[in-house]
Length: 189
Image (tube, rainbow, N blue to C red):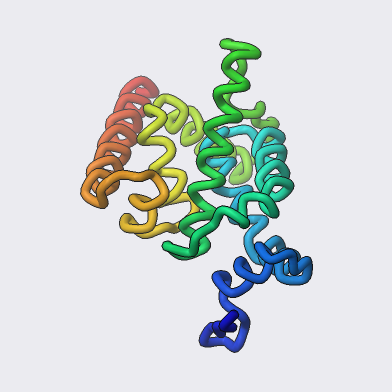
């Protein structure tokens, strides 16, 4: 097996994944350390609930040793990992929907007592509610592009759509959020 090294001297994700798929626990531990937070962020962007995102993240990493045996290395490890995470997050949403159709998509936002913190919290709450109102496709695309800083090309690979579709979806997200902000502003006047 050929070892590949990144510009900073660290072993590449792809090399680590190959070693981990062969049972190297140190390589697996390194992948876990590098990408645990990434899996959590992607999952949170899809399931919109911190506890559920943590559960999905743990499920992904618990299943990772067996999933790595099926990784063919045809794409970047992180692209494949986003796909695995997105699929696990969608599965969690389906499970939650069958348990309860009325479950809220976001945890309750705690009330902050004063000034700027309260304003920031109110804006975050508005954004969460606005994102909740988007279709699943738009919300998932926004989670990858905005939440995890993927390029349109990378998000397209993860979502299994054309890059132009990702660009269109992001345009729709901006258009819908702009319209919601205008409505909210008009309602406040």
